[in-house]
Amino acid sequence: MTGVTASKLRLYFVMGSANCAGRDPMEVLSQAIDGGVTIFQYREKGRGALRGRDALALGERLRKLCLDRGVPFIVNDDLELALALDADGLHVGQEDMAAETAREKIGGKWLGVSVSSLDEAVRAVRAGADYLGAGPIFDTKTKEDAKPGTGPILIRQIREAGIGLPVVGIGGITAANAAQVMEAGADGVAVISAISQAASPAEAARELLRAVGRTGKQNHP
Ligand code: 3NM
View 1: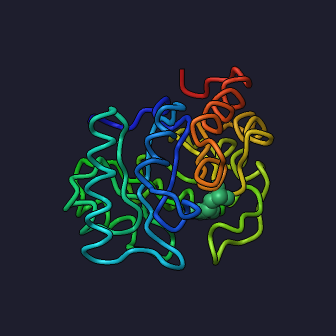
View 2: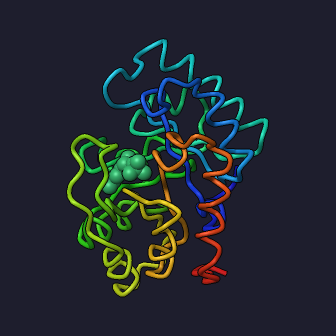
């Protein structure tokens, strides 16, 4: 997999076994890919999340599915796991490994960094991030320690500061509000529950893609 391109971030599906409402994560991801998700992040966090060998075993299956289907595969927070799975990239939050350290350890793999303010965005760019996950944009119950939503203004502030790196909005995003995130200057939207908890993950992904595409704005043509 080569460098991050904004077009691959258009519909970014984030998921771990705890997000699947008791369904098989392989089935949920497979359906999400049928529906058109453009990138996947394995995020094994939250109550009941798998650890150690179990997290690795599920990761191996999800990673293979992404390879077979040509979908970039990113690992959340866990450098060892990212390396063990030969992921395309690693995503770190502000409480995880420092972005500078992550950059050093993963070499040319993609590095995503979560930011919840303009200041954090500026620092993530300096640390060598390839893309930013900005949020939470809207209130979310999926992440236990999430702050209140900032609204799409966070994306606008990042763009107005001249940051041209690919940016995805995350947190509480659905087909009903995704267009606002794109209009503020995002390259894509990242979602957990809007796909993983949907009765039909494939249909949910298609609806989100329609919402994202409807804005017609290409921030990085
Ligand atoms: N990170 P949902 S919000 C994993 O703001 C995550 O950095 C966030 O889940 C951040 O799409 C979030 O179900 C949860 O709201 C996103």
